[in-house]
Length: 394
Image (cartoon, rainbow, N blue to C red):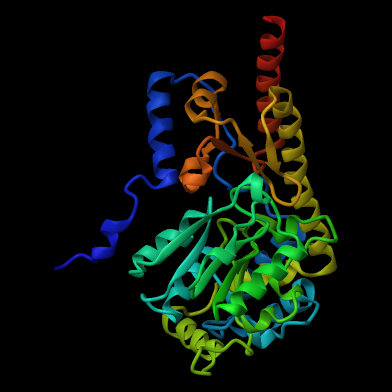
């Protein structure tokens, strides 16, 4: 049996696997230390009551023959798609253009099947590692990573790229926590159209945006339906990281260069590789988009944004540039050098090294606000004690 050669192209030290190794080594050395994780973007708070009630009701229905349901449509429950179209897109996108899935990460991988291994790809640098790894596994060889740094407002200079087929863009961004402005997204759409390219727009954190001037979807930009696919997720919005529920939007106006429909091909991919998201998870999604569920979703996302605000307050006295945190639950801190091990050993705080997101992340640390309030407050106490000690020592 021959192994897929593309596995050899992956970075052997996958970001979070490498973090686990370092943590294991630290725990072996200091087994009594209480580690606080501000690293992985996993939620800590329970699923809100009305949404949990929707899950429980569906489980109850499955126990009775009269209300039992098996396979659903591979595109997803119609009621959920209609609610997503209304709640997230103000019905500018139709339910027929929405595909329910088991999460944005899975869609990112499956979308590669639409375009093939000869596609030229552009990524932000730093970037969510899945964009790069899924491209490498598909056999992509022409991949450009454009710097997204404080100097350019975390918006790459796309105009430098002459040929491109796929552009991965995440806003609000993971890892930087920065959201693109409407003018920036207009520039992105214009660039994609000028190169006959497709944007894969990851809006998984759009529910954290509070500034009404910031776009939550690529489809707020005129003409984006002709050049963009959007992927999103309930994971961070309602505590569904373990339940798994997301969606993709593939507009019917999106065509290949030969005029054929991308939407129709995506429908075929989903029918071939996916039997539809869990009907239990989808019932939770429907409950999340009721008035009560939307209110609970807002409360949960506010909780994580407050965590980030508290962390910022503790980090600011250190004097390093801090980015993000206003439209996403991540802080991106420029220490100018690798500080992951120092935070682990000195403060017993686990962060994410920026270098794991690309070469442009070197010297940065990502701090996640997804922990419990108790852990966040303890982390701030540890950081403030250190700052106080440093000031008294001067």
